[in-house]
Amino acid sequence: MRLFDTARREIVPFEPGPVVTMYTCGITPYDATHLGHAAVFVTYDVLQRRLRDLGHETRCVRNITDVDDPLLAKANELGIHYLDLAAGEVARFDEDMKALGQLPVYSTPRATSAIGEIRKVVAELVDNANAYVTDDGHVFFDVTTAPNFGHISHYDEATMLEYAAERGGNPDDPRKRNRLDFVLWQPSAEGEPAWESLWGPGRPGWHIECTALARRELDADTIDLHGGGSDLIFPHHECSSAQSETLTGQPLARHWMHQAMVRMDGEKMSKSLGNLVFVSALRDQWDPMAIRLLLVSEHYRTPWEWYDDRIVEADERLRRWRAAGEGEGALDDVRRALDEDLDTPAAVAAIDAAVSRGEGVSRAAILLGVAL
Figure 1: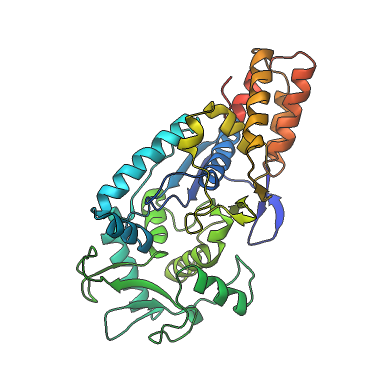
Figure 2 (figure 1 turned 180 degrees about the vertical axis):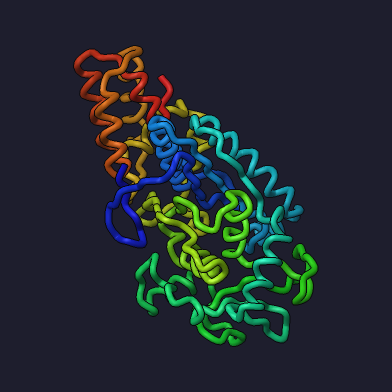
């Protein structure tokens, strides 16, 4: 198998051992699952299916960020407890994932389950002078102590600062030594959840949870593969990698894999913009396997635009595949396509060709997670 590695910027052999350790950044549960989310998790699911088909055991961790600024703001707006909001949205997310035929992941740990581990990691970073404490109880990571900072994104400083400002990094915070330094621990505002710490009562920053959870859940300093949406390359994954590497002296991941954005009305589909197509709403009208087939028809590294006719086309394709019946048509072609940077569009085309020849394609379809 060969996969594109974001950090190396090329397609390279992916050669894990018998047990493949994987971590994909999950949801912040303050709203429903949209197609952009689903695209990420379907990609990881197809990868796991092919790896299992090759004889590997896969252990994929998908975290839940159940304490973070957007969740707390939404809960405050609705006048409900943040964990109640999270519980409802996680339940809806789980229903969406089940409907889309996702394999059960190895674990789905919550950020709030790892407060002890997070405090320990932050303390180690402070003790090692990779982080510093401000007079008001903020703890920041010092990016100048991470010589590889920037090795995943390859962005220049101006681009990093732009994305940091857009994505909650607050580069103009006067408490920082360097504008790209990022929060590991912060005092909680009034009404926010708080935990005791060496630096006063507070809560974790965004990036630190993934370092703590990956180490705890997969019991390793370095895992085989880490990823998520391409909007997480910076700052989230760059910062997660920096704090992990300075902590352990080892790379956080051997391979970085990122899903391109799904777009709508010319912009990336995102909660902040509100240009969303929710999986739960689509499921009210369409077969969930048609939704999945729509997603695997696009290559994971290619951005694509949503329009209503796409689900119609996917549903028609699903009907043709089902009418072809059971069989092993296109199976070897699908395997070859998935082994070449998870080329799901080529796999779909191979199944289409087999169907046109009158061959059953159920085994090939299930490698894509499409149950016929």
